[in-house]
Length: 631
Ligand code: PG9
Image 1 (tube, rainbow, N blue to C red):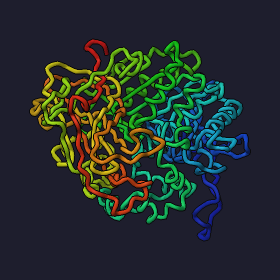
Image 2: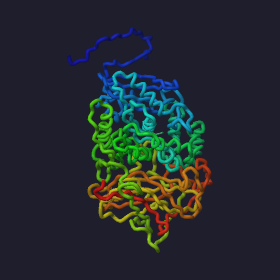
Image 3: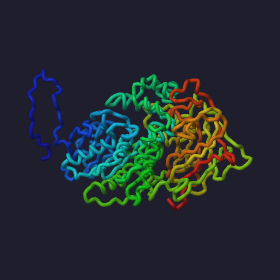
Image 4: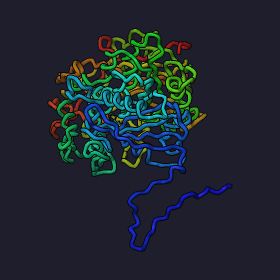
């Protein structure tokens, strides 16, 4: 009774000459607590998309969860082929398995098993894409097929996915199929130029070069770009401009690279494909949970901006949800107990999946499930080490929020103060920015092998650059009371350069007390909360770059990524300013050229940078400080 009964064994007749790889092999279905169906689902233009439908044994009237991906549906759904469904699927699917969902993964058109042509995160059909199909119609056609061809289902579909897969979820929300009942775009790419994968405020993210070869050199998984050095800093510095490196590696063969270099500015190609703008112009039909990592520097822009674009349409405040966790890119689907040196209150990723994602999906998809009692905004506070809830986001901003943000001023002698600059104090602080010695974004060396370091770089102790002669640090007195920030800080920088173009990087940092008895190595830690880069040539118009007049103070105004953080008494607020962030972003040559992708070695020149702090040019940061007891 305890042994597995071996029923039919139809051993084939073999001789020593029988080849050892049979024409067909399959594990017996009885091994698994689920079945797998591989389908080619037809789209309206005749292209068929490879889709894996994973059905738990005994399912009936079960809801379906769909992910559309360019990263191999077969690998995601069948890569592990474990006996139990919960071990077979990616970890982030645990709550769907627990609720008995039918899980579906599909290759986007043109990738892996799917037919048709591949376009990288393609724009919605319309003005800049004259195709008849896109990720919105493909999602519609897929859902339409699923509700008609999966007899074990209850006809209701949810969509979930992270990053590129989050982009496909967001695209499905545009004119959605009526069976799409709920969606969770996680770290979605929403605007590739403003602050997601390709650029941040016009500065190009070098890491994309390897992504382009990996994704678009072949239908399956392609190689990353060959690197001549272990240390990426060395690799990119020796390569010259991003364009030089791309040319050396043959990227001119890749149409998407050609599109990138044809559109370095925020022209119609970018602004018209920005998914937040498209969603803002459509009715809100599907309850949606936007999921964001507070330290996700890949898609820093997407989820909060899409949430904000849709929020005005959510009149009853029961359709549009935002979750922001203490995560790097995609960590919500993995273990979320730590990030860098920080230990959170348990596995925050599992908490999100179990206490937010599951009840949200269940309530819209599972027959008879209770309505989820979930706050519209759930955000982790790394200062108090707990999840906190809100009705709306942000809690403080420049205008239109419950609280107006509070300016804090960059003052002489590296001070940061709530009082504006006084007459008579030194007018500016300066540094020399040398593009031949750019400021690193993480301690060197940073090679592909250091995955942990690279992933957690966004929480790295910023003392590794504090004190560099080309980094300015402005720091407050130790706080005497707790300070809560909940929103996006805004930069209002008066800066000049002796060059004719320049980047400005601004960071908001929580400086721990110099001694920290409960965790001594944390004494003095400079914990970055919000940082971003701004390419100076776009200060007046993102679509039309302009030369910067040398040595003339100019105003640079832009928003930084969201913060939800309690600064504790004894901690200090720090603002760092620098003019490069390398190798994460390509270097600004500091001499105005038509396209920085093609800057020549002679264009890269040192520049004297000044940050002004006079009564008429008071550089400041608008901090989203929330009165105590209001968050
Ligand atoms: N960051 C990747 C990506 C997102 C969207 C478009 C292209 C690439 C990703 O992790 O999927």
